[in-house]
Amino acid sequence: MNEVTNQLYSGLADGFDQSFWLWNVSAGKKMLKNRRGEIKMSVFDLLKQNQSIARNIGETYIEDVQTQVLQQYFMLTFTYTLRNFGQAAKRNAGETPTLQRR
Image (tube, rainbow, N blue to C red; front, side):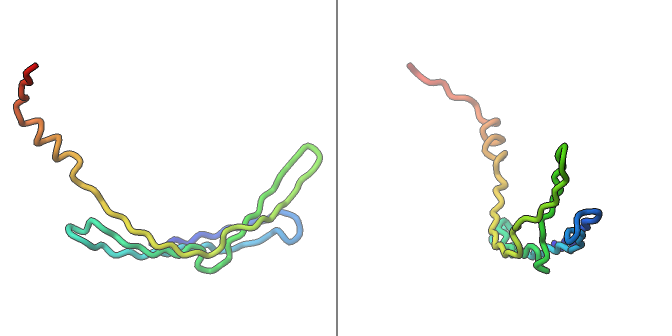
């Protein structure tokens, strides 16, 4: 996966008009029997440019705020796919019910 987005902030107070890129990348490899497992490495904010800018508007004020955000981080994930949920139900549907003695 390769995802690139641009964030543009304009019309705000001095120092808040900014433009930056967010680039997220991940690569994975299928493994195990029937390719049921996948290991994936992801990098978020590859360019280390992520920012958080917000504008709060009240009855008597307009406030532009910049806060700390999570910047670049790496994530390693493992996913295992289960595929046989319907198999047991199909087998049991074809069987004759047994009577129980009391």
